Length: 469
Image (tube, rainbow, N blue to C red):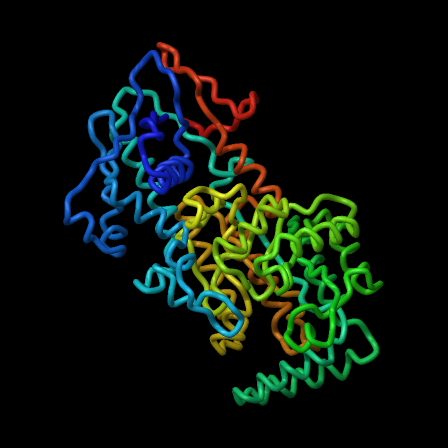
């Protein structure tokens, strides 16, 4: 348990960091108490603290220390944590790549070579560790990390970029392989594509993914394009299929049959447009006959802050777009679900971010790594990093990674990835389910602690799951 200072006395950015760290620590927030409980104390530093760089904060565990009944956090650490978790530098820059995205090199963690570490999630653990040392005989309870007594979590996700015209995508992939001199893979793709002529390799690949997950008792989240394609959008690699087309409807039905989640894959038009988001969200909701809670941008194309303000205005509950297109890692330093920070408005947005940790094409497309076994090894290494902080690993596997579309070894590699994740015993659920669970846990409070240290911990008037003492 932990008692926070009066948050109204802090600037919004520092208040955001305090609440984020408390949430990540899983310490139960306390109001009134008849016995002493651990308190959070913010310390003001001098010029040396102001000049401290990000790597120094990380290597020094953010200066978080235990006192007698106190967890002490430097004020400068709070500002640094909001800068990392809120990707404030990326919200403020005008730099763009050819797809309109903020280049990863503008990310604060990339600049320090720290993007493979969930440093903000580790700061939450440092708060919990300090509270444990500071507690003495004071009552100390923590919330359960994930449902079902699991210590960490996995969200399997898929982006449906292709539903028709698969030979065109095979041709583009063959050109990519030829430029890299991958002639053995070229031959394998040509053979697979020849066998697939007259069939539906995309539907077959989707069914194979679903079957691989179902065989292991897993479900996943699918992000679907829902605009009207034109020659221009197809040439740009944006919208490539009609969501109402029979072939697309069959794919959607296959996901629904297995109780998978369907979210919006925002087209290029949605970049900063709440109206475009709203139209596409409503259109997709009509197709699946349910509310669409989540969104991920096609090509991960967004302007941090601006695009997410439009998402919130369109009514989405969560975004799952903040990740690197050209490498894998923790772009916000988070292996968890957390509110988004709006640097322009100096406030949290009413939408959660579910950061992408690992994506197949970050390696094969941008890094030139064609060996699927290395994709799997990279994914599992980052899963171990998320697991070490009781966190969440979010992976993206594209259903068009099929032999006929240019990826001969991919389906078997996905099975090996699933086996490796399952061996680490995570909670596996859809993104939407995990967001709802985390929102409820974040709302948990012990309104009163009795003289015996006992407390009822509630969220919305209902008991919540606590970690075993």
